[in-house]
Image 1 (cartoon, rainbow, N blue to C red):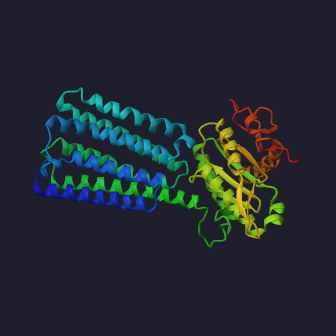
Image 2: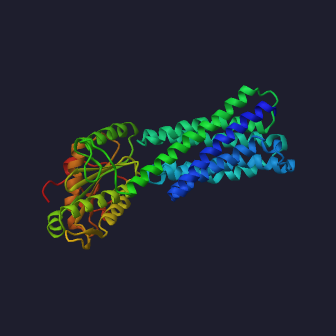
Image 3: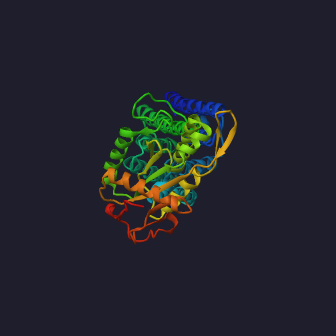
Length: 421
């Protein structure tokens, strides 16, 4: 490696380390699981680039040649496997799409084993096999992030850009590790820039998703737009309907199973008379935050009107997931909420709520019908113990979600929803 090439890779490693230090500072300022995973990701990238770029042999950190070779063979598959494991959680793949979840989880398990298997090959073939294995895993991640973007996750598009730059970064680092003499300084610069851009784009979306989740946990937000509810800071009225229309257009392309959930609060007048309007607003904020945490920040949650919250879950793994989703939301919003009364006393209140779940099949369904059906299901939920109801696809009757027959029949008809309950 010439002095110019050494300078190029030193600058690249410095840029990657700078991002890692920034995330460490963020972790210290705001400790949390998301920040910790972000720091771990950048440190893994830094370690992989450090081992494969052969920088260590030029700064006095020499090691046995066989040990160095083994580390270089293993570091690529292991780094890609760890990244896929973390990205699976970042995409909420287990809740949104079976293909994403299975491929990312499978690659996280298979890639390290494949890396170990590469060590059994002849020495001159080991680095090439490890590079090919790492590129296959990274290409699968790129495909799945594009898929997540098509399913409605806007941040996944930026993640896909970062994953795109991962491919030349891996190819270049393994070429450097193999000490190919034909590489020009321009190629070194191109591959180093790819590694820096991949680390930067992926690091940005990791930070951005953590920021969104922190805002959700704080039960706060800020917006002066009339399309946002001034109390909960969620989309409301026409803003919510526009979000649902855009999501439905995406769903017509993907033809995936999804759900519309309505959460209605019925005893607002009693709570207002007991504790005052300020306590009612605090209750709405708490309910909105609980709903968003249960459905995830990638799915739309809005306040349709005073007593009704609506959430559109664009993709679910299977129709049977409706049971889990409905019960989880109902259980969360029914937990006691601690409010402050007009006299300053702290009072625990359990809101009288109903959760209506409507199954979205692959066909086109008007948004107004979906909203109407979901509200009817929420009203009917007051009569069931779990406080979550849906239309049984087998009988056409309103039942508790835990009693619904979510078997082979996947389609529902809007006109089957009873309008008088």
